[in-house]
Image (cartoon, rainbow, N blue to C red):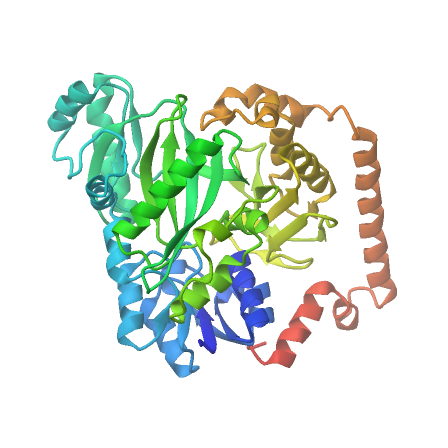
Length: 512
C-alpha cells in the first residue's frame, strides 16, 4: 500500500486529497509556491515544502523540482489533482523513471487521449460514435474551405492539444474561415505550445454529458454513470449535476456501456471521464477523454456513495476494483456550483484579495470543498475558483431547492464572488425544468440579469436581515480587536490570519 503521497497541486483539490489520505492513514505532503505560503492545504498536510515563486511555470509546473522534493521527503507516490501537470505525459513518465507511483493513467494513455485527433481515431477504431470531421491535422485555410463544403456549416475548429475553449473557433459562414483558422492556430500555439488544429461538424445546442469511468491494472473497467455539464460560460463549466435530467434510462445505459468500451479500447487504468455531446434528438457523439479527476467529481460521489480519490489510490497501489458494474446504482440527485472570486457585474473579472468574512452553509445534504478562510488573501496568479458547493437530495426538485437555500446562506466578504449569479441560475425556469443545453446562458441572459438586478420574490427580507447581521458581526469583531489593544502587535495576534500563522509555526512548515 502507498504510505506517503506528494500532492502536486494547490487550492481546494489539494485539501480534498489530503482529507482522503488522512482517512486512509497515508501521510500527505503539500507543495506550495511563495504566493501559497498561507494556503489551507499547507496547514492541513503532514508535511509541506516550498517549490518556487508564485508563477505556475516556476512552481506547480516545475516537474524536476516536484520530483526532487518527492524523493527527498521519501514519498512513494504523487497525486496531480486536476489542471497543472495532471495530464502531462512527460511528468507521469519521469515519475515512473524515478520510482514514484503516478496516481493516474499510464503515460502512453495520456499521450494517446490527450491529443484530440489521436483520441478521435482511437474511438472510431473502437466503434464509438464521433462527431463528423477529420482525424488529422488541418493543413491550410483552403483545405478548411473544402472540408466545410463537404460536411456542411456550421463547423468548429479545435486545438488538438489542451482544452477549456482555447484554440477553438466556431465558423458559420465561408467568409469567416481564413480569420478563424489563423486565430485558432495562434491561440493553440500560445496556450499549449502546439499549433495543430482540426475541424469537425458543430452540433447545435447540444447537451454536454460525461461518464465517469474507473479501470484497474487487471483489465477491469466500470462506469460510474453520468454528469450533466451543460451550464457553461465561454466553454467553462460552472454548474454540474448527476444524474442528467435529459437522458432516458435506456440512453443512460447505452452511453454507459459505450463509455466503458471506450476506456477498455485504450487499456485505461485509473479514474477518467468520457465526454459526449448529445443532440436534441438524443444522438450522442464522443467529444474527448479526460485522463484525470474532474472538478465536478463530487456529484458522482454523492449519488454513488464513493470516494473517487480513495479509488484512485487503491488502483495506483495495484489493487483490483472492488466494484462490479451491477453493484453501482445512482441514488438521489446532486448539484454542484463552482464558487469563484470574480465580479459578475464587471465581465467576470477575477477578484483576488483579502477574505474578511466567510459564512458557509451547512445542514443535511450540503457539502463544501474549499480552501479559503477568514484572513486569507487570494493570490492573483491562479484560477479564481475558491470552493465548490455541492448538495444532495432525494429528487432533483429538492436538490434545486436545497442549492438555492445554501447559496442564500453562503456569504463571503472582502472580495467579489459569483454566488448571486449562481443563485439566479437556480431560479431560471429553463434550469428548473431541466431541459437546458449548452446555449443555456446565452438564451437566458436577460432573465438571469433581471434576477441579479431585482430582489428574489421570496425571502428578500430575510436576506436583508442576514446582511445586516453580518455587518453587525464585522463591527463587533473590529471593536473586539481595538479593545484588545488597538493596532498593536498584541491585538493583531488575535486575528484569524495570525492564528493560522501560529499554527503554521507549530507544524514547522513555513519560514515565518
